[in-house]
Amino acid sequence: MKKIIIDPVTRIEGHAKITINVDDNGIVEDAKFHVTQLRGFEKFCEGRPFTEMPSITARTCGICPVSHLVASSKACDQILGVSIPETGKKLREIIHLAQMAQSHALSFFYLSSPDFLAGMDAPKEERNVFNLMKTHPDIVRDGIKLRSFGQKIIEALGGKRVHPSWIVPGGVSHKLEADIRDNIRSGLPEMIKVAKKHLDWFKIEQNKFSNEIISFANFPTLFMGLVNDEGGVEFYDGKLRVIDSTGKIIADRLEGNNYQDFIKEEVESDSYLKSPYYKPYGYEKGMYRVGTLARLNVADKCGTPLANDELAEFKAIERGAVLSSFYYHHARLIELLHSLEKLQLILSDKDILNPHIRAKAEVNKFEGIGVAEAPRGTLIHHYKVDEQGLITNVNLIIATGNNNLAMNRGVKQVAENFISGKEITEGALNRVESVIRAFDPCLSCSTHALGAMPLDVRLINKDGEEIDRVMRG
Image 1: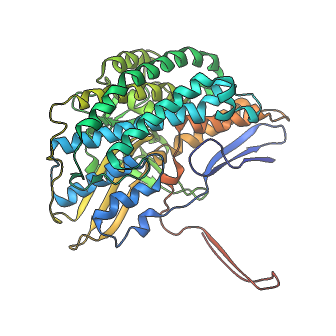
Image 2: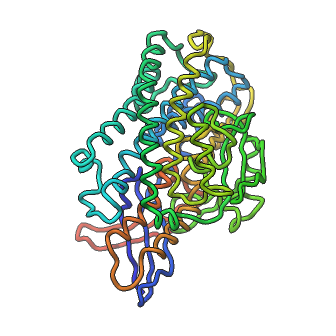
Image 3: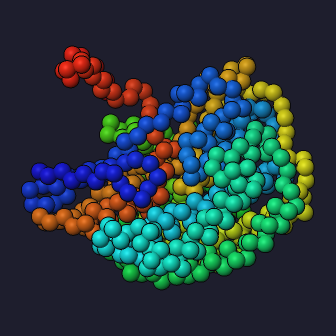
């Protein structure tokens, strides 16, 4: 028996490792994805005023803080018992769409494109964005433009690109100014053109990766995501829809407030990442996927012209749901295009400069649940408070956690397909990492433990001798 350890997994957000067990003949027997970091936001938020939760929980991540601001503030809206003004809602959507755009650009151009442009089997020294600056400068330049555009919108609205505090319970903290609106609108046509150009390129480029498409977490699962009243792609609001691998809707119009009726969480001993599953189907059959691939699978349309055409073409890839997680990349570019188109629509609204942007109240309810779509999938914030509005309990179901069971099975599938015999190539190991990159995990967001955490504490004297040791878990 031989154990292969990939530590750390590279070009992802956060810290993780992969272990692969092979027998004496070099045949893969098992493979696991382990998240090795722990944050613990659910515990240390207890006792804080609920009004602080958006700014606190946004700090779980430097890439998708706006999604946490959105989900957290929506939970706080429920505790206040208010409906936020329509303009306040649209302004939240604008900054959220900007985050979708910058995050998708980061994932595709910075983290994953080295595999497409340098090649899966290229030396690791060549598989990075710095090398691509030399070999494919135009593509890298466009990727930087797209990400920078989204970040500048976040900064213009929220005051800073990372961890803005503009979204607050009840709405947003200040109105949109005309010059900011006009500046964003003026840049959108070029960004839409750039996004469409690279989507067209990748639809052809991905045909070179047929072996990866076949084996990158390509198996039947459920898919879950928000849809709006017309069944379209929805990031901010809407209801949850669950489909099976044939594309059949098995649950629709699910309320986020009732998530505990259909989502259950398990904890595995080898990871700090929780493992949610679709409760009616049980732990084994209830595996589901979220994120770009899932959102396009569950939706009937995008709701913007160019993205609608792209979604129709995407759905023609398979008769049922598109199953290979390699297509997360394709879906990511469609959503990037859709986000930019939808920004155009919302910024054209005649009431977008309305100063009525926030509703204020005291504690009217002792519980609130906020659901939104983060770049990586469905995000749920659940808070309970006392009469003073102090947090008594927090549960966070993070987008990446929803994909945990599928990522683990995907790692094993890739290992079985690309690792065999006595020699283990760098290209094979890179593919094992690449299946994780397809999901675009955000591990800093998602590492929360239930119950007692594993612990190993050793007391060492000045001579380096162990004089006591306490282990738990």
